[in-house]
Image 1 (cartoon, helix red, strand yellow):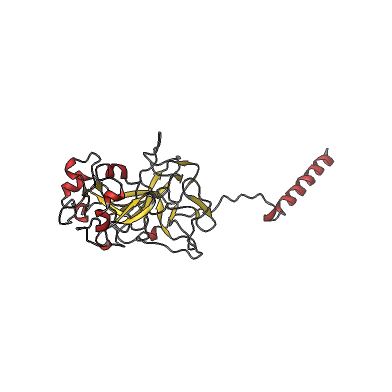
Image 2 (cartoon, rainbow, N blue to C red):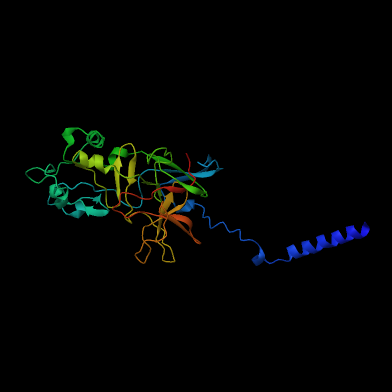
Length: 318
């Protein structure tokens, strides 16, 4: 019996020596991928960033950054609507149509009937002066989905003076939590319950959902975006519908597209194209992919698409 116990002890010791003598190369590969935490120092002056407790959509109890911001500090807002059909591109903003970006200059307004192949478009008077909303009430009424006939053929322009003192508050995880299945944004299909916003630029401005272009055009109105891809409504404040390269960027040293903000799930958002002028060819359905430097991250859609990213692959704050 003693001999048996001695033999068993010897075998156990040999197994332990064999286990602990294995090199790291012999161990199973447990690599889970690079996870990059949110860097709060990237948010610009004019934003307030604090840390709070939060619970994410997958039940993770963690911490989040609470970001409070108003209007951008890194670029001017506007202009949006030109005054006359003789005005050049510097007098107006841009319009997004079928993936393309168009300058909203006087010529664009003059030729709307041709552009949309609809003779009901006529947004200027006999002097060439363009019909532009010129009060906060007009801004609110013309931006209503059920816009009245009195605003037909108006260029809708809401100006910064209408949102003085307005701030927005966002919550994003301090460290992103990757999901195995993507999550739809609020309002996108049956059962969709995700966040309404796509993300946040470093200046604290919202990367918004697609603008309701069909409603706007159906009322024979135009609500242009400025050259930064943003415009204003009095409830939402200033927000972006396109990434045009005007807001703060973090340049990458390896030829990768510049970083422009964070998605609602805390993953980084980058410009559409890398420095070679090409979009990555391995983007998933949300417009995301991974690398060893940035971990999982997104590339925005083309500026003319009226879209940023398609869904989230990370947990978000409900």
